[in-house]
Image 1 (cartoon, rainbow, N blue to C red):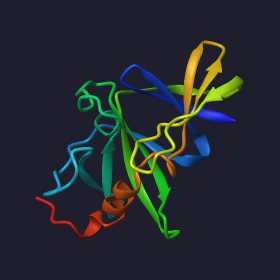
Image 2 (image 1 turned 60 degrees about the vertical axis):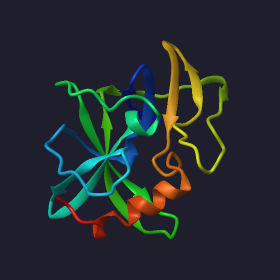
Image 3 (image 1 turned 45 degrees about the vertical axis):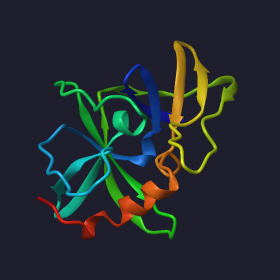
Length: 155
């Protein structure tokens, strides 16, 4: 499988390239009143309001650093009711695309419904790599907020 590799703090993650729509530089985001701290803000992309998730903040770390290397990975999430929503995933750095050839048995992430799950950790030729699934990383309550976000007031 071909994956896009990126960083959340010191963690290296991989996203199936078929799940990524586009990688863009970090843009100015508008804050959303009453949004969870892990929603970095929103921006308009091709006529649609796109929420941006700060994966650092969501994972319990400090907010994503404001570096020139910070990027937004655009991906379509599939909601609990089958609906789709384009979201931005804020990462401190996007590295490259590569073949994903895991070795051995993975260490699985959290199975709790109220926990963030950045995916199982696999052994790869140059260390450890998490396989990130955009449809499985958010806790249940976060899905509700994210898919209702377009109705929120934007300042």
